[in-house]
Image (cartoon, rainbow, N blue to C red; front, top):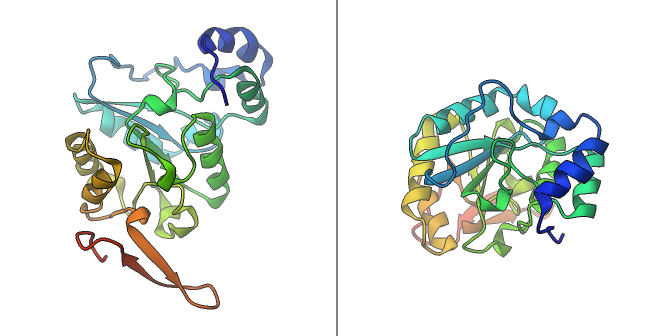
Length: 234
């Protein structure tokens, strides 16, 4: 999708007046946190990959939003999956998927965090990445692309999304989220593969690109082998 040079003007003129429930896409609610983009070092956008109404009722989104924004060196903004009418117009008019707080496109963030609560949201993740101009496959992403993180109860079985997610946070996010952000910040400027290797050292973080999944003849997962000696076996 080619992004329009004046996409924010196009958004206000050609999209929001003509879609169902435009307030889903405007932000500005009470108690949101809007930090100075240029003055904040680490930029995180969190999403429950469904419509605004479903996403805002997800407790994990509220927890992550609060935790990240409590850090002086980080900001957290929100994004949700557009409904089909909005998605069609975004593609037609060249409007990228953007955050609600500052309307920055998702490809300008350091990390995109998805909370996966049920399997039907998997394809929504791909829609959102595609609308953001981010390669769907983790192996095709470059050093300048955001890191794509996923957590939630669905990631206890991460393999169905392993080709698309850079890092899975398996377990309670409160336990390791700050450690994850610290490594993201400390490894900035390194090649993407080296950053992923460092993130894989955090207990609870699974980086599928660094492992080989081995299946039995009848399709059951037999084992997951590290591809690099420095990567934890578990």
